[in-house]
Image (cartoon, rainbow, N blue to C red; front, side, top):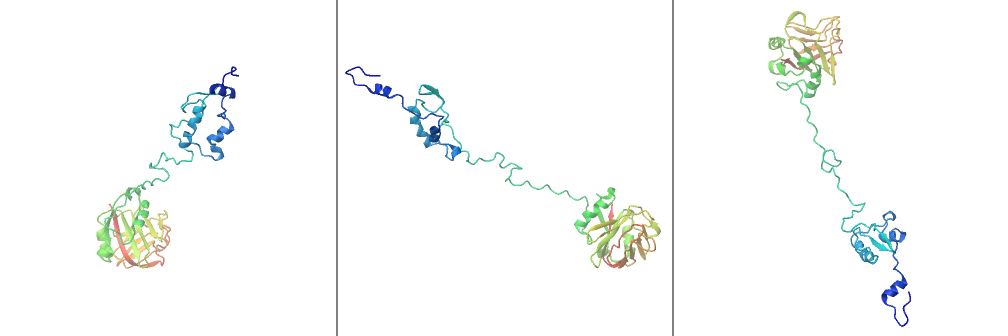
Length: 289
């Protein structure tokens, strides 16, 4: 646009002659370089850096970043630069896990272990023959009706002395199933379960629930084979459990100082004591009322 003769062109006319000021297109590569390209390792502009772009935006006719349209080269453009009024979160910033502090969250303290179920066995007094672990292992091998019954100490050599007569007297009247526990001088623990009370008899008595057992050191249980009914027999001089072919699965003398264990047909058992014959260290009879 030429000025009339005699007139000096004004600033507006000079600007019109020069054409609109050039600015890089918002979608062009130079604009991306100016704004920072995270894919090329540049940090996104935020904070003070965004403030330096406000004059450029005003010069381009975009005004404040807020979604308003500006004019560049006669075209309406919507800037894709996010509003500085919003908090910009960098992709590498730490984010608190949503589940922190909740049970099962990785890093949270482990929940307390569930309390162990108490054993159904209740002993009236600690045993000198079996440990707590042994009684818990033996309990499930008892008849189901007796597995939750308390154990009552009827006789023990440490309290009542070594006498088979005394054993009969203290264990017989209750007429309850009983456990005979023995620890020999080699510290081997073994015994027998009686389905009926222990008493004197001139013939064998008992039922197929009778069994022998030993801890050597793991628990072994020897049950009735069905070959004969030689369960229990006793008098003042001898107590016998299991038999056949002239051998007893377990026997004790009248003083309860000596005894023996051998394989027998009734239970098809191993020798409960490593030596076969043994000397008694402790002996107990427990009633299962």
